[in-house]
Each structure stands twice: as C-alpha cells, then as structure tokens.
Length: 617
Image (cartoon, rainbow, N blue to C red):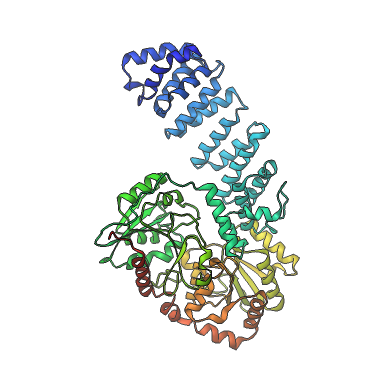
C-alpha cells in the first residue's frame, strides 16, 4: 500500500472538492495519471482515508476508474457497487440502478448490490420490482435474513399483510433474535386475525417471550396492565431512540406576549387525528396563543388537510428535515409548548423530542399510552382514562383536562342518504357492529362476540373488510365456534361521510378491549349508535368509557366479559329498554353538549397549557 500512502494527501484534497470541474487543471491531470496504478483495494483505501468527502466527486472518481480499467478488471463489480452507493446518496436513483445492475452482471452473487438495488426500486415506488430482485438474489445463508426482512417490509407497505407476516416468520426461523422483526410479524398477524398471534413456534422463544418483543403498538391490544405496556414501550425506546447530545431549549422558557404552541405531526391529512383536532386549532384564542404546525404529512388534497393548514398561524413543512434539523428549527421559533401528535405511531419524530427543543413538551392523541422518554413532560389525558390513583405508573406524568381528553369537531358532518338495503344489510335482524381496525381485535374478544351471537339468534355482526386474509380468517374462526358465514357481514371501506352515515344503520356497536375504539367510538355516539364497552386498566381500554360517561350513558360500561355479554344480549332482546337508551342519543344534542362541545374543550385545553407554561423569573 506504499503507493496508496504516497497518494493519500493529494487524493484527500481532491476528494473534498465539490466536483472535478472545480479542480485546478493540475489536479485533474494528476488524478487521471494515478488511475492506472490503483487497483480496487488501493482505491478503496484512498477513499476511506479521504473521508469526509462529497458524493458528487466520488461519482466522477469511480467513473474515471471504470473508464481506465474497464469491467474486466478485478474489483470492477465493487467499483460499480460503490458508484451506486454514491449515486443513491446524491439522489440520482436512475443511474444508481444502472450501477448496481452492472455490478451484478459482473458478479451475480454480490448480494449487497441486489439488496441496494431493491432499496432504490422500492424507494422509487416499484415495490414488485424490488421484491423480485430480492427473491432472485444469490446470497449466503447469513444474508438471507436481511433480504427476507426487506421483502416483508415492502409487502407490509403494499398491505399484503399475510404474505408479509409469512415472510417475516421465515426470517425469524433464520435468526430469532430480531426484536424489530418480531414486532412487525406480530402486528401483521394481528391485522389479519391469525390467532393465536404467537402460535407459530420460533426457535429459542416462548409465546410469552415473543409477546414482550411485540412492540408498543401491539402491546395496546395484547396487554391489559399499565405496567406491561409501559415496560414494552420503555424497552423499545431504549433500543431505538438514543438520547441527543444536549438539550436546546432554555429550561426557564421565553418571554413572549403570546404563548407559542407548536403541534408536530405526520397526520395533517385525511387521518383520524386531523378530524379530531382541527376545530381545536381553529378555536385557539389568538390573543393568547400563536399556533405553529410542524408538518411532515403527505399532500393528499383532502378538505381536512386544507382546513388544518388554514387553522395554523404558521404552517411549516418539515418532511425534508432530519430530526436534529427539525429540533433546531423548533428552537429557532422559540416554541413555548410543543405538542407531539404521533407518539409511537408511524411518522413519529421521537429523536427530535430528545433534543428538547421546547421548554415544555407533551404528547397527545396519536399514541394512547405512556411514552417514557425523559424529555417529555406530560401526557395529555383526563381523570377517567388515567385515574389519579394509578397516575404514578405512567411516564410522562398526566396533564389533566377538566372533563374529556378527546378533542372533537363540532361542525355537522355531511351524511349522505343510506339504507340497510343499499348497504346489503338484513331488515329483520339486530345488527351488532364493530368498525375498529382488525389489529385491535383479540381472540378472547372474538370469543365474547361469538357467544353473543349464539344467544341472540336474530343477531348478525357487521365488520369492516380491512383485508381479504382477515375476512377469510374471521369466517374460519366463526365457523369453528359454530357461527355460519351468513351471520357475519363485511363492509368495504368508504369515504368518511359515508362511513358515519352507514354506521347509524346498526343497532349496537361492540367495542374491543384492551384497545378500545377512539375516534370511531365518538363517531358512533355522534350518529346516535349506542356503544357497549369493556373497561380495563390502561388508557387505551378506558377511551370508550370516558366518552360514554361524558355523554351520560355510563350503563353501557362493563368491567367483565360476563357483564358485557349479558348486557349485549339483553339489549338485543328487550326492545323497549333498547329504544329508551337509543333515544337519548337521537338528534345528536347529547353529543354536542358533551363530547362535541369544542368551545368548552378549547378553553379547558388552553387553561391546562397556561398552567404548565414556563417563563423566566
């Protein structure tokens, strides 16, 4: 490597130029003159010694090497591969694809090139192309795991959830020590209702051990103890979200005439969170609050997105910013209170929170559970979803609103005309329904529902058709419990207005536990549909009971499976009792006075913000 060492100082200088054109002519001549003397190992050594360097200059250096040496030279596949890496870093996906393909033409078993080529393809929206490349890749056993994981990831993004969970299971059979893979595998199995979720054996892992790695979102459906949910969230955060080097915001706060409140979200679009929070954003008292929105949402062209953005005093797109850069932007804006609306859901910017860019930071709505990172000060809740006597089990600590934790939009929704006939529903049956996502449904809860159908012979169960595999599995589970397919009806997904309108055609909404309906529960009550819930200990299993207590229907809250079944059966058989209960929701006035009183909610929310505001003394 003596030649390499002799070249190192000059090569390092050149590698830090923005491009070849920016080099003095003498450097260009020198660079071309040394190329014949550099084999692949020597070139790689020089590049490593020259870090940091710019992708653009390395692209030109690699192209020059290939021009001089050609594809037959030893190491040409490696140079094409490295060229693909730098082209990808420079955002030139099309030429990166060509580079990786050339590497594979020379060395078909260069699985790293297959891996990266698939990444570029999937990033460009060619999911099927990426999967085909990974499946065809020639690889040693130790590479099979990462290729299977990528195939599983893309299948999950395509919503081919059954194929995703099967692929991820194959990955776990090659290497069971993969907590992140266990998390996605279990969530996909929940989403397709493949029960028991942890039935397939994984070498060296017990079902209980697998549950511990199921991840914080799955934990909301799998565990009915706050301590278990908090432990899983804490372990996930410790593994995934490192602390920042330092905090940015002054602990004592700022001196502003108005409170600068910042909302950070990837869901300012046609998402349940936006439908809940939009009127709060609109109603903030602008004499006291200045409202910032840090938005990493996609542009979906929806009316709700336009309304959310219009409600912000400052709409700041941040998708292009890295977590640290976003934290710096929030610090530069001198935000007094930062509200995280994602929690542990997709699109979360948790590493931004770890920089502590605002003196006060809270999490709200996005994730219905604890989020134990030290930089979060509060979890916005009410005294029902987090009873004060167990508040010390939560991190961060609850910041209580006076009445109900859930924001809502009081504007009357447009409800198109619907009918049972038009929705394919029987006219002479008692229709139980549940329109929650399937991952909230557990085998134990399904057993309860099937017992209700056994005892209510004129009852049918109306569910959302979330994915075809889940539909097949649910019908199979029902059949094994003695309930025929004619007793289950599946509704296709429709627009938000249509979904709310058709929900009113049902007779009783059957809630899931330990992960209740949230937005869907509020929608049901709004359109006059009674909801039956089974309340547990954690926040997620108390959402629906908080809504029922707020609207004045505490008798629909149960605390045991037996009581849940008995009450559902009683309401289906006792028409007078059922009609009296439903009449209390008719017309929506009860909802508007309670859950939908957004003017009152906003004032309570703002009072809570003022109570935790920090100001220099």
